[in-house]
Structures are given as C-alpha cells and as structure tokens.
Length: 180
Image (cartoon, rainbow, N blue to C red; front, top):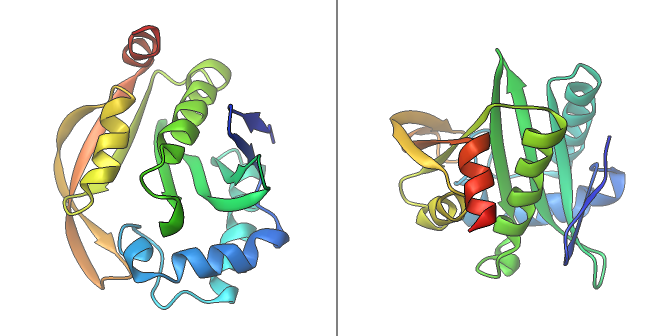
C-alpha cells in the first residue's frame, strides 16, 4: 500500500491507532449523514470493522483507503479512497467537522486522483455527493469533475435514500485542471 504526501498531508493506510478518531469524527451526525454506509450512532466496533474491511479490499485489489493525517501535528482528520468495482473507479472522502472549509478534502482528493490516474491507470473516476452537501460538490468541481446526473443513494445514518449528484472526472480533464 503506497503512502502519499502533499504539502500539508500524509495519506497512509488506516490502522488501529485511528479507531478512536474515526469513531469520534463519524460519530458526529453531520459527518455520518453525508456518507452512504456509515451508521449513526457510530461506535468503536464500526471503526474497527471499517479498518478490517479496507485491508481486505486492498488485499483483493478492490480498493485503496488512505487515512488523512496532518503532517504538522500528526492529527488524523478523515479518509480518502478509491473503490474499484466492475471496471469502475469511485472516489470517496470525508473529514471530521473541525477540518471542514480548510482545503484538506481537495488536497487529499487531488493526490488520490493523481494516484488513480497515474499509478492505477484509471481512465475515469466517478463520485457522488448528496444534494444537501454542496461543499463536497465544490471539492469535486475544483478537481474538474463534470455532472453526469442524479440518482437516489442510501444514507444508512439517515435511514433512507437521498438525492445524489453523480460526477465523473477523466484523466484528460484532471490533467487540464492541474495545468490550469
């Protein structure tokens, strides 16, 4: 599993030391409601199971999950990763609420997309964001993603399907956005 770095961030595999932070950050309903599969309340056992699932997916070649750690103080802030399924590559990310609005999600996602396009040779990556989470949409827009449509997606924390914007980013679009 690669370790990636940006100016401010270390992106590394999740480990047991992340459990308490994952539990705390996703335990906040404002975070959990923006994720498809996170339950609410979110417990320590959920975080342990998540880390185990991510290790299994990596071993099977089905995904890459990176813990987002601020290099300045080694603080765990969230996760960013790629789900590889049926020949498609999906980007996902989340941050604890104290880290919102500071450019960390864009910085982490940009580095993970670079990994997807250059190392994994993905032709395109898709992502979704719930209609009531426009900040996530802005992250994807900054990276060059284009709207493909809408679909209902389940939010386990909310207990129902939520309108979701589906976006796609091609390798060419990503290269043009990085050059701009």
